[in-house]
Image (cartoon, rainbow, N blue to C red; front, side, top):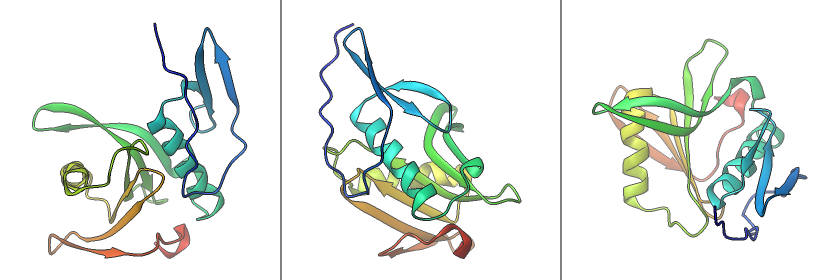
Length: 156
């Protein structure tokens, strides 16, 4: 299996002391939530940073964060990158992570909105680690509004 050497891109998120290892020319990052080593791709680099930002900066309880949860959309099996729940088990936030070189465009938002048509989360967050987009959903009206900041967990 040929893999390209991963060069960590500085992100628009605080740095974290990740456990990074190399085995057979493949670089891995330890996922603290799933308790396993994952191949370090550019998207995983963003996802791990964003998860740590949720926990450290925004005070999200790690037990309420689900990574790569499955969903069925138009009879197709899909995966949402990150879902955050409240203590009642309601979905608060759907987070779609992209590699740093992937621009956050309307089509990325549309993808997350399609996933959210199943999840019905109160927030959609898009990130490529450099740019972050936060949309507060009004599920009853079927509308949303963009905000500059992501709220802390307790204010959700």
